[in-house]
Image 1 (tube, one colour):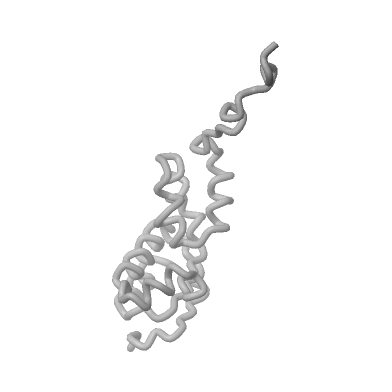
Image 2 (tube, one colour):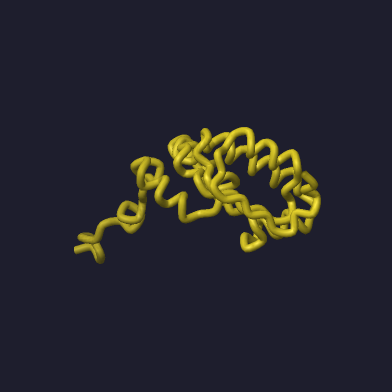
Length: 134
């Protein structure tokens, strides 16, 4: 008798096809992540995850503050244009459902106008956005 002959191969038990998660499960998981994590990571995993990352209801709340280490690093490295582009992508993906925007440092007048023209915000919170003039 072979040692361990009745045991299933470990790989077969651990293998999962995460691309087959239901859309509602994916969007629920994505709401726990930040916008930056979805835009730069989770939404790029596969086609089904990209589809889930584009569901408008996922983008009702956008917090892009330095509490997020990626935002903090991007602000300090001068990648503010990229942060603005990411915020605009979220506004577009929200299809008018964005209700809350919280931004820190990188926000400028152009981004405020972009958001204002496309989303009926209930809350706009700006932190240390010294380039916002109007």
